[in-house]
Amino acid sequence: MSESKVAIYPGSFDPLTLGHEDIARRSLKFADRVIIAIAHHPTQSKDRLFSVDERLAMIKECFADEPRIDVAHFSGLLVDFCASRKVNIVVRGLRAVSDFEYEFQMALMNRELWPDLEMVFMTPAGEYTFLSASLIREIASLGGDVSRFVSPPVLRRLRERLGT
Image 1 (cartoon, rainbow, N blue to C red):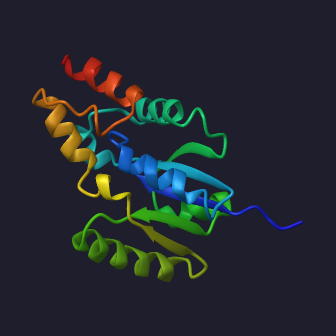
Image 2: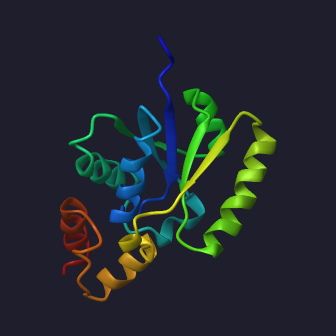
Image 3: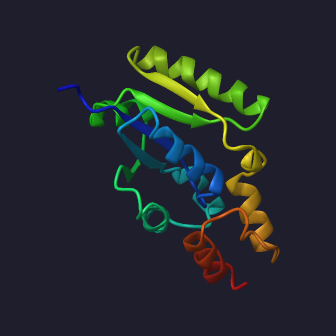
């Protein structure tokens, strides 16, 4: 019997957008399981809208219908987290050329740190290519309607947090 293929999809996911969801679900076309890995960024904690625990709960709720998607969190190097889970496939989303330049540089560095690591770059569905968590945070904080860009559990939490 062949070994199960697991991919890690890392990010801050603050908050999870429909673009993130699209990439995670489509990753199941080549992976048997996907671990959405929320990165801790203590130096940027003031910029965060949701705590890691809140994001964990939110993402679990968004993927409650998909048992092949797990959620975890990590601090430190992504390669160390991957090694600890014995996973060598990492999924990253690309929306624009500027994303590619940054992700390409990170992929090369990660490969230097762990040569067995494979990076898979995916673009979201066309209707989500402009989405970013920071745009969602900004629009929602200014009272804009983001209901077309996030799942109901995320929208509910955004409204609770921002009082909109």
